[in-house]
Image (cartoon, rainbow, N blue to C red; front, side):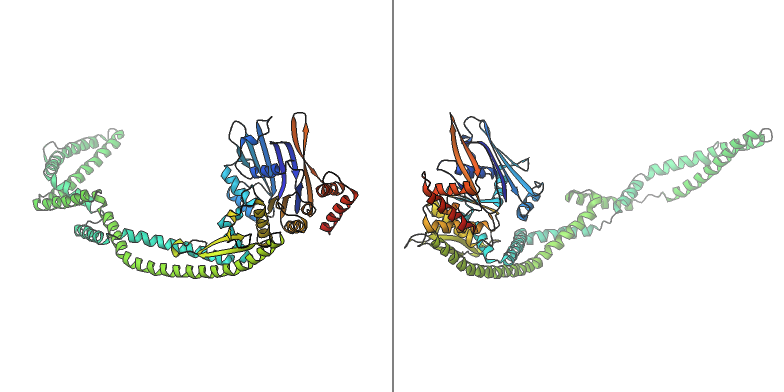
Length: 556
């Protein structure tokens, strides 16, 4: 609900503060007093396009602040939470117009793109008037309004879910079909590659073993020569290392009775002698294994050549050939399963399509039933609003399957004929702003139970009417005000008297400046304003009595 509006330095308004309440609030005043400026200012605060020429002549900037109470509006609260802009139950929108720069927008103090402000504004306020954007002109809004009136949200949810599943399955199927266009050639290639790598029979770790054996056989001569030299120096030759160490060990052992401090050195030499003898034994055993095997070496070289050739062919390190084989096998298996998977997907797609079409058909039937009832209700209200020849239609045209959407297979549009013999036309083609305002009012009243936007503004909905019709308009607006907040700019006392609250806009000129002021009217001041609207400049006792009677009847 709109609770506060502050305007500073906009057009003829230097500064205006408005505190607004629930129910129906009427805004009245002389022509040119600035009533429409208030509506324009509110529109700017909700994200309408700005013109720097609207800034007050003696100022460099204009500011509009709009405050809403969102405690009972879960839709708006959820929107604010999704955009990380929630700060409690109050929502503050602010718009700044700068003469030499671009306008700026804020939601709860955070700088915001204008598009985001517009998106939020559409959830908070709906403005009906000949100079304002009206969501009722959008087919999407008309469809949503009809669906809300029909009360078949479960059908809509089911239709949307089935459509998404159908389209998701269709996209998967198309991707697989596209990928399998050259499936035969790809299968042949994969079969060949898998067979080639399987023939190689390279196991994990085998390459390391082959490399090690190949290096040993390739250098067997050097190994034999070095081992023979080591054995000769360690043990076999005169003056070998073993002989020298054994001699020194015996010499030190003979000296131990003379000095026990040589014990450690002698023991180390004795230990070294044992290790030399063990090393000699191991080298003799190793030497016995060093036999040249040209055939085995040739076999190893051929094996390595095969491995490296395939590694270059498949562009992987030789050690990763087993992993490449596993990858190709998985790809081959997946491709072989494609035909089976495609058949299953085609069956699933047919099932999903059939389910969607069935639900969309039931949704369409529910819409047709609600459309007749809604059209009749709106037509009745239009005829009571001094549009006696009006005929309202809710047209539902079936869409071809290729235009199926999450909203079903219906194209919905509101049509109106205001004159006898005139073919019903879309609301957007209604020429008269006053007629369009009354049409919007009739629609709002007819769909009162299902509307979600909490604040409705009607800018001169009484244009071109008077007498009893004006009183009916007023009563309809008051009826709307019982459930939602309604602000109504009016020139008719019959409408103004129906308001739960009354604001008077006046324009005052001093010297070279003009200012617009807003006054909340209570009791006597309100009687005076209604009397002014009834009698013009000359207000008689009879006029005052008539004004008092109108207010009493509205309150009663």
